[in-house]
Each structure stands twice: as C-alpha cells, then as structure tokens.
Length: 217
Image (cartoon, rainbow, N blue to C red; front, side):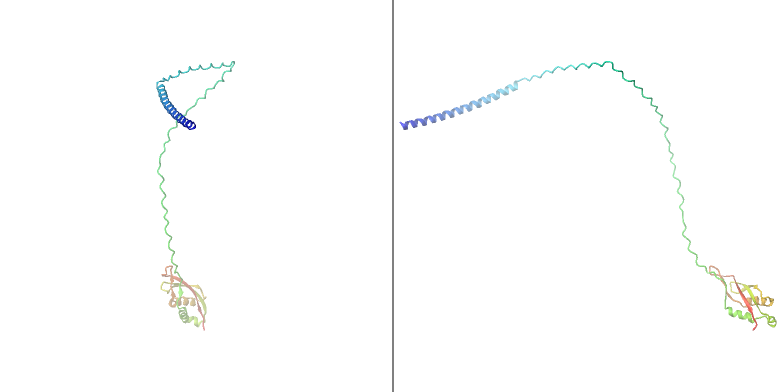
C-alpha cells in the first residue's frame, strides 16, 4: 500500500507541473496576442482621430478711460521760439599763391690772404767806416792846420742804391766854414755804405747822420 501511494503521489506532481506549463504557455500567447491587437487598435484610433482647432476666445473690451479730474488748470502758454536769423554765407576767400622770395645770394667768404712775408727793409749802414774816416782825417784842410783850427762837424748824408753819398748837409756846424766844407767834401769822396733796402729786400735810397771830428796832434 505504501509503494502504491508513493507512485500515485509522483504522478500527481508530474500532472500538476505539466498543467502549470500549459497554463503559462496559453497565458503568454494570450497576453502577446492581446497586446498586438491592442497596439493595432490604438494606432487606428490615433490615425482616424480628427483634431478640432479650438475656437478663438473673444477679445476683451478695453476698460473705459478714467474720468477727467475736475477743475484742472489749463497748461501754461508756451512762448514761441525766437526767430533764428541765418546770416548769408560769407563770400569765398580767394587765396593767391605767391612764389617764395628768391633766396639771398650765397655769401662767398674769400679765403684768408696768406700772411705777408717778413719785411726786409733796413736803413743804410757804414761799410768799413774806420778806413774812410781815416782818409777824411788825412785830408785835414791845410789852412785849418796852419791856423790850428779844430772842431766837430755834424753831417747828414743821402745814400743812393749804390751805397755812395749823393748829397750832404751840415746838421751841426763847427763854427768854422773851412771845416764844414771839408767834412761834406770828404764824405762824398771817401764814405761808402751798405745801401738801404725796401720791404722786399731791394736796394733803395737812404740817409745817414754822423759827426766828423777834426783834431790836431
């Protein structure tokens, strides 16, 4: 009896499981089919629904204007603007283009002159004065010797470019005409000079002054 009960219980369990699986399959098929049909029905409804446009709402009437206040003073009078005087345009200014003044002439500064050469001017000087002075003494006037006349004669002579005396004058007389005459005569005959020179070094006329001493031994 126990073995038969156990076999019978196993058969029931298997039958229950099979029935449950069948129910699950039927339910899945039912749900799937219903879902597809429901989707199709919704799609058909959506495509066939007419959309009615809403009617425009009536415009609201504007509120009435506020009542004007009583006893409002009138606005102050506005003075008209003063007239604007427009001066006529001034005549155009004509500009005269003047050429620029001529440029001043260029100042040409000459180069400085070279310094002049040193001057070679000199006065006349005696040439071998001891010799010709002795000759003048040797020609002591014989009449003055006999009369024992002595004296000093100052003379100023003019000397030519050749160094010889060309003229003689008494600058200081001895008081004896015989000695004065002998002094000038001796200077013209025996005196010799180095001629005077100009600035360029050329011989020129000069002068010389000296004193002739007449003394008896």
